[in-house]
Every structure is written in structure tokens, then in C-alpha cells.
Image 1 (tube, protein in one colour):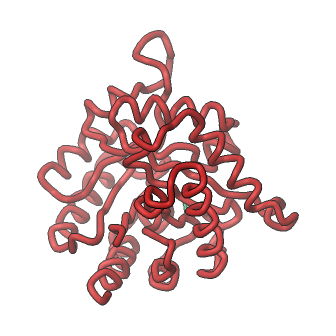
Image 2: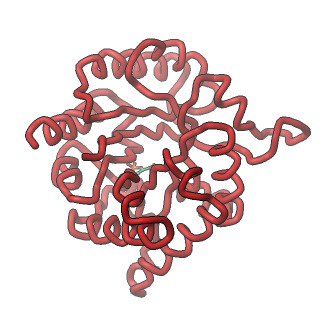
Length: 258
Ligand code: PEP
């Protein structure tokens, strides 16, 4: 059985004080987490080090929200893979819809970042997902295929051993509209089949596919109950332990009742 991953993407939110406070609360919660549930937080870059210090010794994993693909050098404003590793990050979120649709990242850029992160030893959470117009036009699977193909070009099965995919329909991110469990399962099953064809069926069964898009305490259990949903990437509800912890609890309950 795949281990759930419940990941909090803090985006451009929190202060140093609130970030460290939230990390401390989650570290305490994680102490009681079953082996079947992994917790990850991705704070803004400036708070990685104080959050890492707070999480030190806890079961909560640290990740970044992006990275640049070049080695350290003359790239003003960018952050290199080895810098994230040096700050204690084990994960990096790549291809988030805000990076793609606000910052204009292409599949090629996402791919360069993915390959750089993997070769630098970071575990990648690769985000894919369709726009509302694409879903309405019946293009969801075509969009997912294109983003998977582009993002994972040149990434071998050995390279992808720690890969995590996040299916995040853009129309569900930060909108309060959530994909139904059936819509999520259909997209996740499609993504797993894509992985089976591109790599191997055995490999596809090992990859965790998270759902993201307005996950909250009241919808987490029904989404996480789906066969191919292996966790959640949570934005807004990850900013307070009072809203994030119930999502962790939903995952914990499902892993202890099966
Ligand atoms: C996200 O940022 O990846 C996300 C899913 O946000 P929210 O949970 O707020 O929809």
C-alpha cells in the first residue's frame, strides 16, 4: 500500500513568526502520525531555514515551492537545487499552476527544473492539471498527457524512483470548488496508466499521485478514499493547523482502518 503524503503549499504566505509557529504545531502532531502518513510543508524561501530548525528531529518533511535548473552562478533572484538541499529540503514542488499560468513556465522549463532537482537529490512533486476551458472542451486527458510527457522528458525510471505527481485541476485551486471524488479518481487513474505505459506497470503502482484543489477537512476523506489518490497537496487549508491537521487526521484514519 502506498504511503499517503499530505503536503502543505504555503505559497507566498506566512511571516517568519507564523511560519515557525505553524511548523512547531505540525511537528507535535506528526509525532503521533502512523507510518502510513507522511507530512510535508513547503514554506516561502526566506523561512526555509527557521522552519527547518523548528522541524529538526520531527517527522515533518521540508520542501520548497520552486527551484532554478542552473548550477549556482550569475542568475539574479534564483535559487539552486544545492541551496535547497543545504537548507534541509528533501522535496521541491514543480510545475504548480501558478508557476505555469502566472509566471509563464512552459513544460520545457518544468522539465529542466525536474531533471536538475532529481540529479541534485531532491524528490519532485510534479504538478499537472487542466484549465476549466480545457475540461469543458473535453481536453483534460490530452492536457495531462502533454504535461507529463513534457515534464518527464529524459527522466528514466531510475531517476523517477521518488517521483510524486500532483493532479491539480486549475479550476479547483483556491476557488473553493473541488473536483468530485469521481473526477479526481478518473484523472488519477489516467495518470497511473500513463506512467505504466511510459515506464512499467510495476513502477506506476509505486508512484504517489496527490490530489490538489480546495482540499478541506470536509472533503478530504472522500477524496483520499479513492483507489488512486495517494495524498493531498493543500494550499489555503495548510496555513493553519486547525484546518490542516483534520486533513492529516482523515488520512491517518483511512490508513489505520484498512
Ligand atoms: C495549491 O496551491 O496547490 C492548492 C491546491 O491550493 P488550494 O488548496 O488553496 O486550492
